[in-house]
Amino acid sequence: MYDFANDKWPDGERIPYKLIRWRFLEQFYRYARMPENFNCQWEDGWERYEKQSQFAYQMIEPALTRPLEKLMIEVVVLLLAAGRQSAAFDQRHRKNIAVLLDDPGLAELVRMLGDDERSEFTNDLAMMDIPHPRGEQRSVS
Image 1 (cartoon, rainbow, N blue to C red):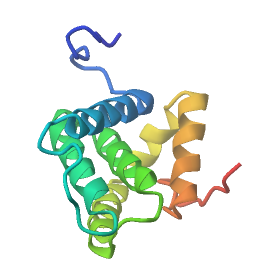
Image 2: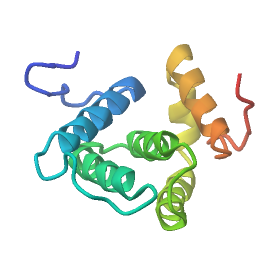
Image 3: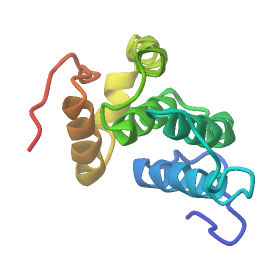
């Protein structure tokens, strides 16, 4: 069980998709609360999101050791951009996803997820037109 008070996950356990999302958003929030980032001038577009996202990503990605966890954080980053990211940002994260999807054991790991977590994760993949690890494309429900 995750120790919220100390921000620790038990060794040897996979970090669930829900917790990866929560930790990403927690770091995103932390970045926004930094005095130098609050109410500062930003260029047009989604530069601010991309900088916040990159900060959050860099804070949690090193703790994600399993290919499935790494795939999940990439999906979270792109999903929260909601299609408004720069082409370079999109390409970088989609390239990371493509590399992870080449892992032959990933399909089995996705099949081992609980029904709710698997459904949510595969629907998020489908929403962004990312092939399902089994090579299937799921429709968004």
